[in-house]
Image 1: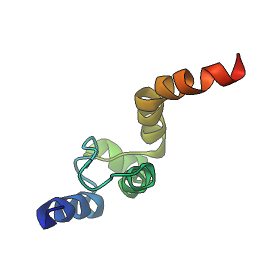
Image 2 (image 1 turned 90 degrees about the vertical axis):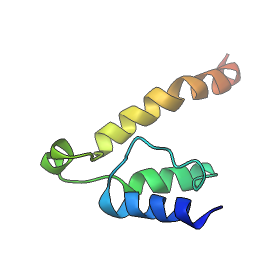
Image 3 (image 1 turned 135 degrees about the horizontal axis):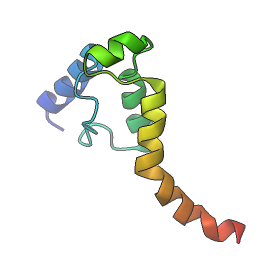
Image 4 (image 1 turned 45 degrees about the vertical axis):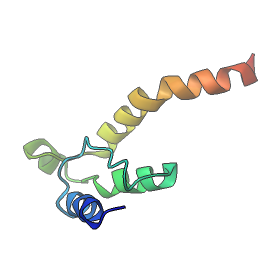
Amino acid sequence: MRAGVLCRAVYCCVCRCDVHDDHSEVATTTDDYLWLKLGLVTFDESEAGSRDGLTLTQLQTMLLEDFGLLLAIIFLPLFV
């Protein structure tokens, strides 16, 4: 992993910018991905609307849209 990629991911977490980038070079596991996304969450709703921020509601919606169908397909045979 290049140092520039890690520095960019840290910068995005500190400044809460570029919330739609997955930083897949750094976040190689599910835990890393979730911690990275939680680091981008802002708790002030007005701050999230005024700049490139991410609220908990937006994170939940994003995770549901991105991974909800995939998880349903994986776990559906267990409940049938």
